[in-house]
Amino acid sequence: MSKSLPKGEFELISWIRRNQGDDPSGGVLVGIGDDCAIVDFSPESFVLVTTDMLMDGRHFRLKDDGPEAVGYKAMGVNISDIAAMAGSPRFAVVSVALPRADAVAVAKGLHGGLKRMADRFGVVMVGGDTNAWDGPLVVSVTLLGEPTMAGAATRSGARAGDVILVPGPLGGSLFNGRHLRPEPRIAEALALAEAASPNAMIDVSDGLASDLGHILEESGGVGAELDADAIPIHPDAVEQSKSYGVPPLEHALHDGEDFELCLTVAPDRADALLASPPPGVQLFRIGEITAAPGLRLRTADGRSIPIEPRGFDHLAGANQ
Amino acid sequence: MSKSLPKGEFELISWIRRNQGDDPSGGVLVGIGDDCAIVDFSPESFVLVTTDMLMDGRHFRLKDDGPEAVGYKAMGVNISDIAAMAGSPRFAVVSVALPRADAVAVAKGLHGGLKRMADRFGVVMVGGDTNAWDGPLVVSVTLLGEPTMAGAATRSGARAGDVILVPGPLGGSLFNGRHLRPEPRIAEALALAEAASPNAMIDVSDGLASDLGHILEESGGVGAELDADAIPIHPDAVEQSKSYGVPPLEHALHDGEDFELCLTVAPDRADALLASPPPGVQLFRIGEITAAPGLRLRTADGRSIPIEPRGFDHLAGANQ
Image (cartoon, chains in turn yellow, green):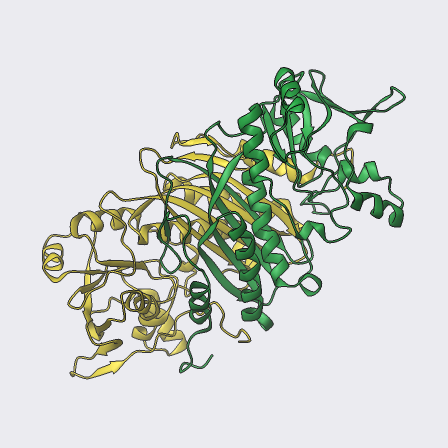
């Protein structure tokens, strides 16, 4: 690096600051360019925090997908976690390890995608950490949000008898690159929380069976029975099935990265909700929480088949 | 991965939860194991946010240093950023990309180091994202804190005439691996903020010249003059100089990762502070902020030599 040239990092950070736009939230007291950001959550003082890291070759392929799509996904998956708590996303920080050979171009593309998704949900990027190295692209986003007034929807409140609902079809997110274009269900989650106070809620990132399994585990070891015929299957899963021969229902149960909600609602509230769902929200009743542990699939001919969670394991293949 | 075995990721997360210990803060409403953590900042609703990512080969060498030292440093550098704002660190989330071959052992060592540093400052780890891949270890910590009652110390408030102070010696942090053992100056920063309301403050992570340069830039283009003889030089810089021949003062000016504070204080308050520093806080007066821009070094024989910032550039070598 020539000492007479402006330093790459600070030049890039200046570029990012120029391309930040306004702060629509009015909640940023100190933004990019200091040791910390300072953000204002008043009148609330409860803060939702979530973080997700995406790595080249695991969650995206930089060469095929391009940095803009990576940024869009990285912000989207975090917003989806805030949706799963029925919260409102507010402020994000982003740390990146950039491949050295193309660091500045990748950083600018990434920022464009991050900002495009952030702007859709009023999220302000308030800071980050920018590095280059000889390794592949790694992006880590941490997102802060506000819980809803109705109270956060956690994974741990499911009770036997609860009705299990999903607001959209599942499976095949890899087929058309849909995993790169998450549609965080913020509005739907807020509307559902207000209308029916779900006992538990999660977003489907690891796969329906695996994520519902998290709810069962966190809710003290209750179980669940799903209706094979009631699970809405995404057209992508049907197409993928034609190409690879795995039944569409398997995709709907086990594929990850749908970023759709899955919630459990007390039976009386579920009936009312299904009779009169929030405007624009579709709802599929896919099964019930049971006192008996384990996850089972009820088929049309009356059989009950155990389902093993086998969604995306982030340590798959790791030496344990 | 065998379907009949517990899944590696969830087994590891269970281990981390068992090894979390209590929540000394009482501020964690929802911790590890949900889509988001929920933390309580009441009665304050202002939140400090900072993030730092460390990569193998850039900020540490996993093979030589071991995962415990990496975790200790990763948490420490973030706490140091909270110190630089005169804040109190509270809650952290940690995302990691683990080298697949040794993922679980590395994760456990890392967690031990993260927790050892976190415990020293009452920080609670409330969530994270754990992944394995074929690349080197990457750790990203995001830390939330509370601003001090006296108001946060930003980089942007330095004024001509301010006295520049550092509370400890600088340089040579690489020599004995001291960069792996940051000593975040939380107590010192809080005491200095209370005693003297610094106009600007930063922690020395990129190098004194570079970090003071950030203050000058963020403070509207003021300048600074440093006294060559007044800059406290760390014994490590003296030792390193013997081995490599670079003058100790060069190390003190340009080495990074001292994680010492650098602050600017109005002249009258600086005199009072130097006459009666907070208990246990040493202070070195190393120069003054000037209306004339640029950073200069005043030598004993009366010369004034321009200093080019050339601390650690995180994009050094990147193709721009």
